[in-house]
Amino acid sequence: MANIIRYSPFGDLMDEMFKNFMTSRPMRFLEEETGMQMRTDVSEDDKSYTMKMEIPGVKKEDINITIDGNRVSVSAETKHESEEKEGSKVVRSERYYGKVYRSMALDSDVDQDAADAQYKDGLLTLTLPKKAGSAVKQLTIT
Image (cartoon, rainbow, N blue to C red):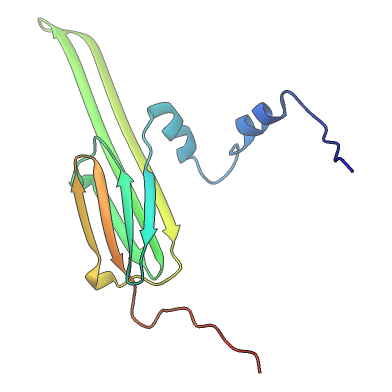
């Protein structure tokens, strides 16, 4: 038997418009207005996680990384000011300040002392070794 689904031509549009309205994530609006985002890839092997995050246009001094158990948080801030002058008169002045934040919970705790971060050409690469003894144990029911 076929399922009947009610179609609303504006349903998806309205859902998308109000999806994050009045939530605790105000950065969504900043990301849409400025285009600043942290696209992230996470891969895992037996010993570590590797996170690659695109953060173009940010100085490495303006990137903050915190590790708390299995939670990894990254925030980045950028400032850009430009001014065009004709003689001593300012014709145009633009300022842009933006901040993005990303936090993820991983399956295993991270060994904070052995973690490594590299930033080159707008790509942040985190190597996050798993903490010894934090492997998942499956119990057998007796």
